[in-house]
Image (cartoon, rainbow, N blue to C red; front, top):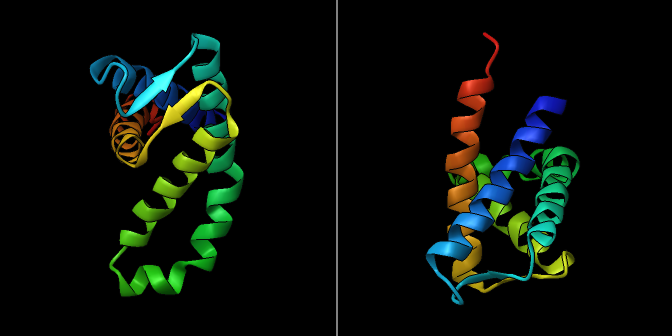
Length: 116
């Protein structure tokens, strides 16, 4: 579990840095690298402790939408972390791009760290 939380924190930090550099001054901006690391920590903790509860509550809706609600929950948690952490600014498109990048990067990190 700890490895997954650390991997998600790393993925979130890399996603914000990547989106911030690709879209300079656009959809995602950050003031400093420590702010990005704090964002990764907050998002990792939200995904470790809040998302499982939300997944259970939203399970019936997830069945009806064929799992699309999981992406919406990730979107909401990314946006919540952007609001919580000072120094990270993201508009709705930034949250969308950040969520997609975080999912892709964390998938690669999980594939590398998978112990099976």
